[in-house]
Length: 378
Image (tube, rainbow, N blue to C red; front, side, top):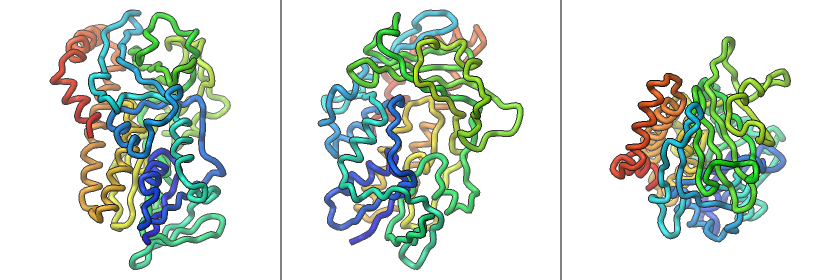
């Protein structure tokens, strides 16, 4: 029996463990540094059909239908012109069993956790050393516990400590010149938009998205604002201290007085791809590569990457895993950069041109199949 150790109990690590559930050839253990899982109620995620197809392999279709939502379209709005520009029918990519889905991150995390045996997740295990023998990997944790494994899967997020250990602290994420604001809005506080759709508001140097995360009252709010620093680049989310004022960012945002449970932080992305030198050590999720946040593929790519690695290990064929992941994530990174550039235009002439082309491209099936279909269909 092969031992697989997973560092980090996020979406990618938990889903990866679920895929091996019941497989007698592998023993799976997840090591989580915290004493519990992050079940932040205010955090919504979008899952395109590529990830829903994979989640259904572990029974996700049986999740309570009240805990998720299937939006039909993305409605584009111009904040400066106070009008709807156009809409994009994302349900065109749906199948009978796999539909574009929004839900709370906490619901997905809890589903993945509850699907596993309780002894699989080891809490309060903060990795401090990763050492190699001829065929095994030895893990040493801060609680002086050590374990050996045949495969090590690193999935502890954008600020991955395990990744820093294996790269001698040389591979780090970078601040991408923007700030994210997250929050929750109650349905009764929303007017002038279609509550069955995702609403995307485009403004000068910012965009924000509002969408339902279940079939009750909760709507997720996320805004990305361009923000360059005059001084030292932040190294982590601690950039926002108690003296930081959110009001200067909230001022021009739609529904800014209705947002509750507000959280804000600098946006970090990966600069380069890193390929481990050992053929029994792999990275998935944001630890592999964190893409810019303007394509709504973070969670979906964590799921997709975990499944591709599962297939590679199960079939004892690892040579193409890194190559295929890099190819897909480069495509998403480039599309996300294009999106953010187009969403944040400030010149009135450029905004008018963008709106004109949006109306055309959102109805062009050939363009949509190339721009979205290559991502949504894995």
